[in-house]
Each structure stands twice: as structure tokens, then as C-alpha cells.
Length: 108
Image (cartoon, rainbow, N blue to C red):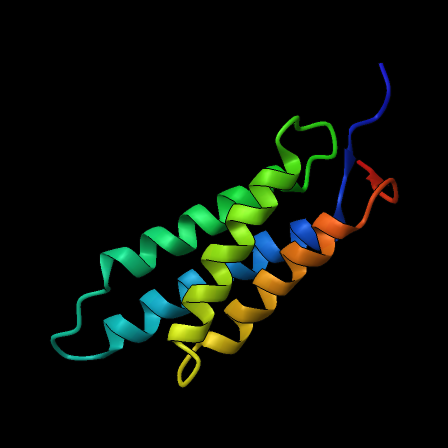
């Protein structure tokens, strides 16, 4: 059985989205009566999961998964551009780069 191959750009996008989820939850918890927006948390979780699946080169719907992740993360990044949006936007761009790259995966 061959080694599993993965895309480092998609993996970085997934890790960045999960990091920004943690930062978002931490910032909201530091505010007195702040409750995290469920839609923002859901978008970050779905974007990170889709990017994570897109990191696996053998995943049959890899490009579709990366497209979903890119759309979710770019839209959320633009909505939050004045606060934590820039890293989220960068994660979306990494998903686009990962989708364009073909055949240059890193062995696990």
C-alpha cells in the first residue's frame, strides 16, 4: 500500500481556520455578555473540515470540498475583515491555491 499524499496548502488552511475559531471564541468569551454567533462558528468549523478533506489527495471530491471551503472562508473573512477576517480570508485563498495545485502532494 502506498503512502497517503496530502496537500500542505489545504492542511494549512484547515489549521488556520481552526486557530481562528479558537481566537474568535476566546475574544468573545473575554467580553462581558458576548455570545458567539452560531453561524460564524458553524462556517469556521465547516470551512476547516472541508479544507481538511481537501488536503487528502485521494479524496474523490477534493476540488469540490476545497471550493466549498474557499467560499465559506472568503465570505466569512470579508464579513469579519475589520476584526479577525484577514487570517480567515488568507485561509480561503490557501484553499484556492490548493485546488489549483495538481500532482505536487507531500507524502504523509
